[in-house]
Image (tube, rainbow over all chains, first blue to last red; front, side, top):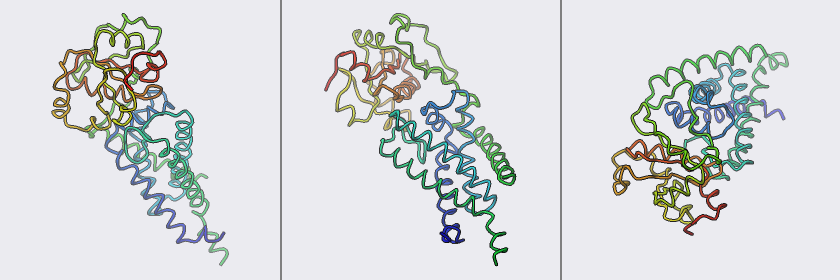
Length: 149
Length: 175
C-alpha cells in the first residue's frame, strides 16, 4: 500500500480533487441567486440559512481547492473538502432516495438533474472522499520519512 | 488536530470575507437572510375563494405570483385560465393538463427579457395564468411563474401540486 503515500500519487490526488473543487466553484461564485435556489430545493436547511450558505460555500470550495492544489494548509483544506463531501453525499443520497426533482448544484446550475446523474455524483463524491482521507493522513508524512531514513 | 482546526478556520475566514464581498458586488447577489416563504406548500384545505387575495407588488415592481391549492387550480381551469407547463418538451409531450401550453423553464430562463415577451406576445398581460410542473417536489412551477411575473403578467398563479396531484384527482388531461 506504500504507493498510496507516494508523493507523486499524493500530488495527483491533490491536483484532481483540488482542481475539481475549483472548477465546481466557478459557476457559483458569482451566481448566488441560482445556487441559493439549488440549495433550497434540497429542503435540508431552514430558509433563513440558505442564502448565507450560497454566499460562502462556493468560496470555501474555491479556496480549499486552491490550497489543496498548491499544498498549502494541506490538513485544513483536505479536512474541509472531506467535510463538504460528506455533506454532499448525505444531501444527494437523501434527494435520490426521496426522488427530489432538483438541480444538483454540483458543477453547473442546470434546472433538473436526471436521477442517473445524481447516483453518478454520489459515486464521484465517495471516491473523492477516499482521496481526501488519503491526503489528510499523509499530510504530515514528511516527518515520518525523515525519521525512517 | 489543532493544526487542522487552525487551518480550517483560516480557509473559512478567507472564504467568508471573499463570499460577502462578491455577493455585495454581484448582480446576482442575494440578501443575507433569504425569504422563501412563498415556496412553502399551500394548505390544500384553503378554500378556492381565498386565493383571490390582494396581489402584492414586489420591490422590483412586478406583481407577485400566488400559490394556489388544487381546488383553486380546478376553478381557474374551469374559468378558462391559461395553464403553462414548465417541464421539458419531451415530458410535456407525454401528457399534460388539458389545454396547457409548454414553456420549458430550462430553455426560457436564460433568454433576454425581449425574447421572453416575444414568445408570450399573444397572451394578454391580465390573463390568468397557472404555472405548474410535474408536482411532488418539482419547483420549476415557481421559478417559471416568477419569470412570467417579471415580464409584466399580473395574474400569475403557482400550482405546486402539479401534474401528479391533477392526475390523482382524475381532472382533464391531454395524453
